[in-house]
Amino acid sequence: MTNTADPIEWLNRECFCITVDQAALRRELESDPSTRDLYASLAKTHPYLFAKTPIFVGRDNVATMQSLIQAVEAVTPRPQYREVVLAWAPQIARFDPGSAGALMSYDFHIAADGPKLIEINTNAGGAFLNGALAQAQRACCVPVLDLIEQSPGLAAGGAPINTRLFEMFRAEWERARGAGAPLQTVAIVDDAPGQQYLYPEFLLAAQVFRQHGVDAVICDPAELTHADSALMQDERRIDLVYNRLTDFSLEESRHAALREAYLAGTAVVTPHPRAHALYADKRNLTVLCDAQRLREWGVDTRAIDILQATIPHTELVTAARADELWSRRRGLFFKPVSGFGGKATYRGEKLTRRVWAEILAGDYVAQALVPPSERHVRVDDVVPAVKLKLDVRCYVYDGAILSFAGRLYQGQVTNFRTPGGGFATVLSLP
Image (cartoon, rainbow, N blue to C red):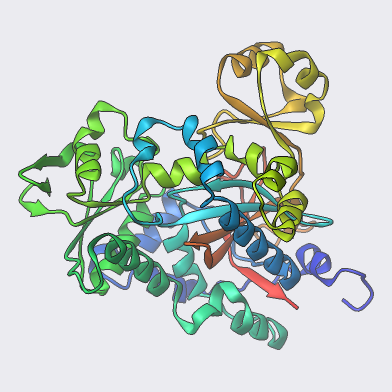
């Protein structure tokens, strides 16, 4: 390690130590009767959900990520910013429920000159799964033990990640209902939840709520009814909804009861349409990287500098600029403005004219291409090592990082179908 100029790059290339204690992971996943046999089930259905090796990130890069999040938080409360982004948001986003919105994520690629923000998401998946993974880390050597004990994503505040996640939901509840208001029942809501790839995480989230004395149910929004100032699931009154829907504006007819309860304040819904509109619409990145506009709004110079350095230039795709964007396509990545999970995203160098026509007909942004960095892993101890792409997800609440997760993959986007890949613990080096 002393013979390389970048020890972090060296570790990500040459360290093949397995740090996941499988017995401990099983205990974490099955610590409640409701999740009995979950470990064995995941081994069959989700064999590449968890990577066995960590990824290494410099603490200077961690500091840059936090600075970027703080810079975004310096812009988003401004009336000028909200006027712009709410103008292209659905009407429901103008309703302010009084809470920040739980489980936001900032996703980064790590470039040679530091982290680059790829996107901001609401209802980001994986936090509870990574809470279990974090508790199952073991040291393969003394230096790694130090990293496990000192990495901010594992040790922040001294509390386990799942405890921090629960406190986040309690904070959402109390912002809407007042300090000390009793939180009795949470519904974890998604369309056909049992068919969702991350359904195992719903089970873990329900387990965490119950461990903290709050009843929890996992349900489809079609099971909900709204009447007499109450959101109900069968005979159970729902206080708070942990919203995992990708209908970010609750427009679909099958989500009508949830929409009514949200607008009436009958139940606390989080994350919610306003949070998505203020942070996660991809068009917002075109504003956050517009230095001239931010200066005109009086944004602090230091915040503008970090936004400029960390957000790859992002621009709207319009028919009027079609020829120019096509000519520059090899250096661009195209994303739908309300997309999620890498769906309908395209690397410019691979575009066909047919797909380009679809992009022009839809609502897209073009972002300067930032290739992900790499983590080398050995799959089943086979030599040579396999090169996997990596990105880093920061789980954030109200501008503060709660935890980190690495994601290892091959292909264009994260897919949890790559041998040796999946969620990976992030260890940070000074």
